[in-house]
Image 1 (spheres, rainbow, N blue to C red):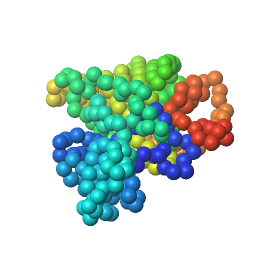
Image 2 (image 1 turned 90 degrees about the vertical axis):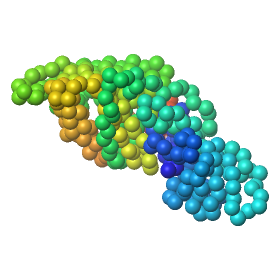
Image 3 (image 1 turned 90 degrees about the horizontal axis):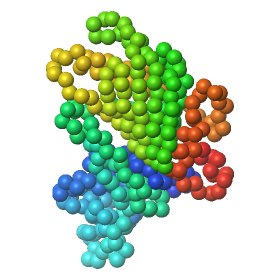
Image 4 (image 1 turned 180 degrees about the vertical axis):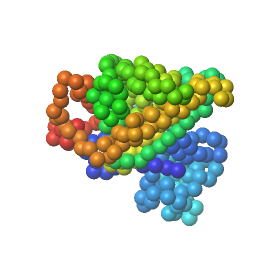
Length: 321
């Protein structure tokens, strides 16, 4: 289907610029098998094409008056009119977005001024490796936004109190343009499949590319790759998807149970399902009161700010922070 992007709504004073936003695969699936992504609202009289629109051949038709648009947003047919207005025949009459299919995900580039993509999606080698298994996916919908979710990774203190690590982990983050690399290392006491309890060294490495792409590699109980796919769908509402991949092991191998337990810990109450109620109900403190053990929260916000364009001057900028 066709989806409106969060920051494109009229009246929003904060708009996301230069970011990669994850969209559902097959946003528009044409006969030729090529995916496309367009604004939801018809340029004719504003009907939502995602509610009742029909993909027909190489076009998508609006449910209101059956105007047909191609992948470039040009109107190809108005069934009740002999002449298509010149403005409607031009590409971009229905606004479309640049997309790419990488890592098993359809990604869309959004910039309020229509600037072409400034960087690419980082390719994850494990996704195409024959030595790694099929994806394991989970999803949640709640009130939040991609920045709050990503900031979680540099908030080191909460790993002990929310995620039950034995101590506040040691961590570091490095920033280079649109890329953030973070490392958090610590210990966690776990029950192994044979019933014994061990304290394991754990390591979490995160790669963030722009506002929209985040991948995390876990080492400890099991080796895992996690794609964190946060899609804003409305103002302060987000769809969060976790996609796990892991090395292949023979059926019945003990490593499979270790992987199952690791994933359960990452998504359960000691993982993201411990974060979600907090994200869902928290507010954003523009000038938080921080202590020396909180981690580089303000440095992260400085990094993330590059992915926004602020309208309305300094007052709007502060309101959006």
